[in-house]
Structures are given as structure tokens and as C-alpha cells.
Image 1: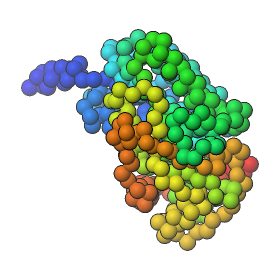
Image 2: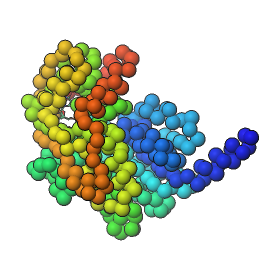
Image 3: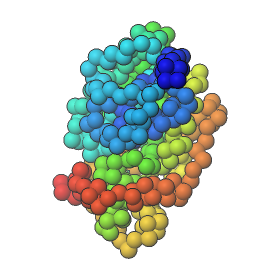
Image 4: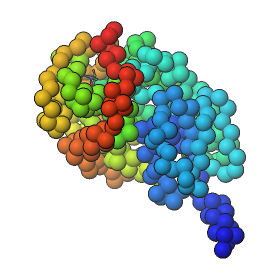
Length: 341
Ligand code: UDP
């Protein structure tokens, strides 16, 4: 009986398609691991855990079709056996991270991407890389479509992330054109949901955490800057569809419903039903004034549209953070980083 079980398992693991996901312990990476497991893949997760959290993937450890490598992709990446797909999602992703670990941010987008493209070429695998709306910088075109070249400050505090991601796109297209590699590029706009780091400094976990602790919400600047927030499940659907499509140029995936940060703070106060106020702090340097994706390409080429509205998505996210112990809710991490500058 048990021999048959192991033979079936061995057979399945050998015929299953293999996918490598870097940044597997992160917010997007861990949701991608879940999705690919659900789709019947064998998933190899990789993370160096500088911003990722093992809690995000611990539920996958008992599964024989999941494997984890604690590895930094800026160093040579070796995976034994066949590999069908690679998704490169390893990167710090919060503006405070870019200030605290700028060199690692640059290296994972440049050296890390180079290593993974090399691995994809060696394995004849299709690779999807995680680019960002930040390639548009503080955009002069609104909403942002894929043919806009952007308005990026190379030497500002966000330059380390923006330029790493721009280099990432350039080298990916070079491998596609020169080596004929199967490549996909997703430009991810602000995405949120369960498993974001509570105190990583980004606006959604920051506001929800503050409200749950009964603290005032810190709005930066006059709060009239805008963002467009996409729920994680929609984002993962878009990425999955792009990977399986035949399209090799960049595609925006995000929710075009735009809101000012000030109105968003008011929404969070209403939805958490906490008696807290808004507190204004200085706008961090290089903070883009507006951001909204033009998703016509995703709609037309991938037949993708976001389905979860902000109210519903925020409700699910609040539910997730509500379950945190006080210890986690009050952990320092990046809390009040800007306020203490
Ligand atoms: N923001 C804010 N208060 C906070 C954190 C962020 O007002 O406690 C603002 C920030 O200045 C920016 C927007 O919210 O205008 C989104 O910031 P986030 O760091 O989430 O992502 P970004 O889109 O800037 O990369």
C-alpha cells in the first residue's frame, strides 16, 4: 500500500510542471505559490527572507509538491532537474525598504534578474518578471499606458527601485530578442490584501494598523496625491493569465479606480469604525502625485479585469489584520519611520 502511494507520488512529481517562484515568502510571492499549487504545479519557492516572512508559506511545507530554498538570487542560482516556468518576485517593495536596504534593492532587480534569465535559458523555461508602475516615476501622462516612457528621478530615494526595475525590463527584453527566450513582463500597480507586512510603511497596512491600535492615521503631504489599489486575488489572476499568454511586451495589471490618500484614510476610519483622526506629516521625497493604470491592453489581450472592489477588498484585509496578536500589532519594524526622521 505505502509502496504504491510513494510510486504514485514519485510519478506525479516527475510529470508535473515545475515552477520556480522567487520572493516566495513575500506578499505577492506567497499568493503565487498558493495559486500554482492549486493549479497542479510542483512549486519551488526561493527567498532570502530579508523582507519575506516564513509565516506566509508555512502552510505549504507539509505538501510534497512544495519545496523551499533559502537563497539570495543575486548569487548564482542552481535548481536540479527540469524547470518549466520562473516567476521573479524577489524584491523589497516598500519605499522605506528602499531607504534602508538600497543596495540589495538594486542588486535583486539587476544581478538577480540576470541570474534568473540565465537559469531560464539553461532550462528552456518561460520567465515572468515583476516590474512596477514605478517605471513611470511621477507620471506626466494620466492614466499610465504601457507606451509611456515615464518620468523617473534616477538619483532620488526611489531611484534604486525604479532603475532596478527599468534595468530588469531592459535585460529581459534583451534576452527575449537576442536569445529568443520566452519572457513576460508585468507592471504591477499598488496591490494589497492579506499577508502584507503590517508595518512595512506602505499606506494600506499603515492605516489599518494605526486604526486597529487606536492611533491617528498619518497622511503624508496634503493627502491629495492619488493611488489606485488592486486586490491581491485580482492581481494574481492577471499575472497567471499573462504567464500563460503569448504576449512578451510589458502589461499593466492594476485596478484603475483612483482615490486620494486623504479620502482613503477616511474610508479606513469608516470601515474599521474606530474613533481616530487624520494627522498630517511631511510628504516623503519623490512621492508620485498620481497613479492610475490604463488597463486596456490587459483587457484586450488577456481578457482580464479586476473584480473585487475596494470596499470588499479592504474588508478582507482588515479581517486578516484583526486576527493579529497584540505583540504582532505593536511590533516596531518600520512604525513611525517617517515621523521620527
Ligand atoms: N502614505 C501616507 N501615509 C502613510 C503611508 C503612505 O499618506 O502612513 C502615502 C504615501 O505618501 C503615498 C501613498 O500613501 O502617497 C502610497 O504610499 P505607499 O508607500 O503605499 O506606496 P507608493 O505608491 O508610494 O509606492
